[in-house]
Length: 114
Image 1 (cartoon, rainbow, N blue to C red):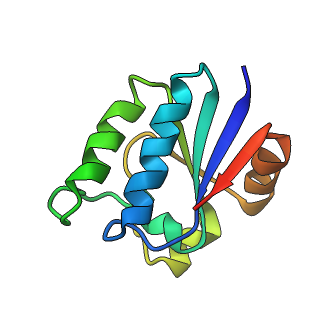
Image 2 (spheres, helix red, strand yellow):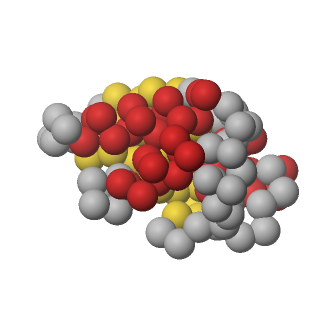
């Protein structure tokens, strides 16, 4: 089993990039990979406690609903929450510091950045 980290660095829910990154994360689980989505920089907005479907992104909402059953881990880099103006994260999203985020990327077998 390979450790795959999907790094989401771009602004959140209104872009096709976010939806595609989350779909890629789900697709990676089909090959029995250990998948983690790391929200960092402006991408931290995608970890916010909100309803993606209400924000105009049903595709993002569909992917997020499948993360639990597919065992996709979600983490957000703590200092990015402030710059992305995120007050609260969704349930199931772990908040980690910058050193832990760097370690996560460093220990991965594959890193995909969006």
